[in-house]
Amino acid sequence: MDREEFRDLLGDIGNYHMPFGKFGPKEFPPNGLPLYELPPEYLAWFAERGFPNGHLGELMEAVWGIKEVGMDQIFDPMREARGGRVSIRKRKNKRGDHTRFDD
Image (cartoon, rainbow, N blue to C red; front, side, top):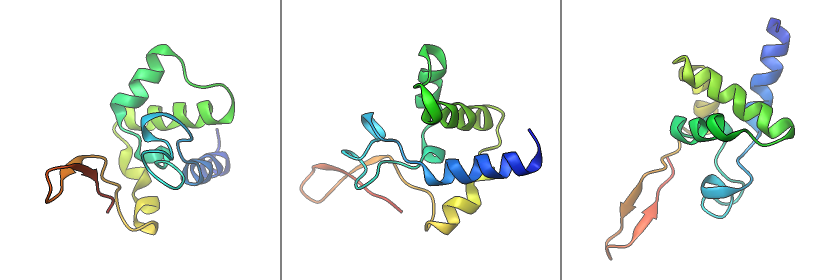
């Protein structure tokens, strides 16, 4: 993969969101969590069982590969452009209910 192809790959990763599951639009409206924000544990699960077919799976596998070698900071410019890292932790609100907060 040359520099231009890698730049295109990063552009695609920056524009895709998780379309289903626990990090999809239902839990992270309106589009789901950006692929580069998916937790390594979640990506590891797919690495063991198989990534989805098609372009989504290819992008998820690329994100996994980048995170697996400790290069997660390569996504920092994307995070900064969108206002910072997305928090996926649940916190209690004043009533004691759990809610998600995004940065």
